[in-house]
Figure 1: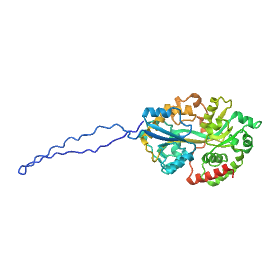
Figure 2 (figure 1 turned 90 degrees about the vertical axis):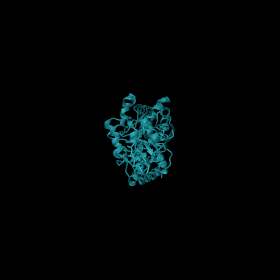
Figure 3 (figure 1 turned 45 degrees about the vertical axis):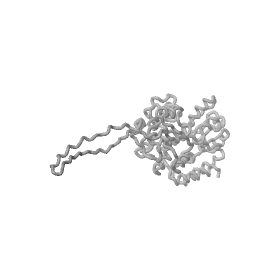
Figure 4 (figure 1 turned 120 degrees about the horizontal axis):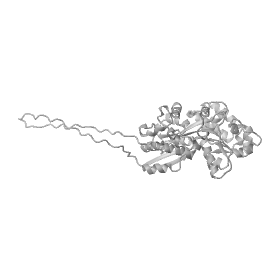
Length: 389
């Protein structure tokens, strides 16, 4: 799992010369002594046995960190965040204290370009060979040329999640729309669904892009004029939105919202938790007819990581097929690890809202990125919408 280190040693030749008395002819020079070569050194990791990770909440299988610690003797300090904005702010501030972070690909590109991340040493990550080539190609084309900085943790899509029982009751005789985005963006639907709760992810870079997509605009537009159009549309349903959520899984599973804009995996996790809580409600991640917005969450090394060798060791550990399969089986997010597919439970691998079929995958909107100026304009537009102004 670890990158091999090549240690070079300077070779010195020792030439012995003889010395005679002044009146005697010089003694012929001795032949050079054989040069002694140091034995090859085994790879050595001299870092302290510590690794600091900053990842999304509810995104690592139970016991995985403990297994890594036991196997390597490396103590993992594992902290979580709720939004890309929170992670980005820490990286921009500098001296985050983290070795591995897990940015969404929409934020990762400007983080790479801004010098906030460091290139990977791929010779320390042999399990990179397990990754799916088309997904790596997508990341290379849109975010990370030559895949120098990022390793997929998981992927998914931003979509609409519903509590089918409560939504049916709230809509009454009104039929479900063909396009699931109508449930959260069309006033005729939101006016009815507000009775059981509408939740939006509390993040401008999640809400504005799906609103733009719904309007037929470029979801990743950098034009503030487009954000104005999006917020004008959102303003029409603002009074019906109950929650701006950073705890979407609990909000759906706990019944605070019957319809939500959320991440596909979180919606599926909420469905599992609801069943565990013996709820009779059925929670479903939808496949909107006009497509959803695909995302990739990616492991990266911070520019000032103090334990890069330990970080590479963890990334390679995570890319083992059994660990990637464990993530998919427990977290309900698809893995980019093609070598793991035969170890994924059939009910997960066959779930079309986790591993979507090829025809729907083709309809999904691939991730892009925003300029710093666009992110600021988007945040201002979103905050005005959220405040109802």
